Length: 95
Image (cartoon, rainbow, N blue to C red; front, top):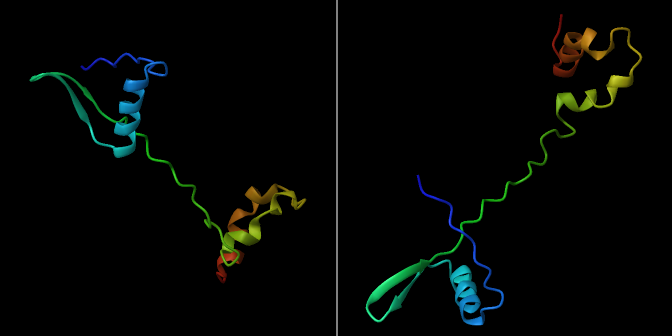
């Protein structure tokens, strides 16, 4: 199992900071060399994808739209006591 790399703050090391910003911007890894010897690899950090918020799940023409706010309808047993009647009405089912 690979160990998590230890972070190094490069805020006060201008040359390394410039290189890190370049790698981040280009999204391409770079190999650090000393003459012909490869010493290290600097690679961009993969950012987690942003989760898009779903919109328009319930629209005004959705049968469930009419049920919004009906929880305070003062019906004995509440909505849950008559949910099947409300579903029939919402979907236009006939008895």
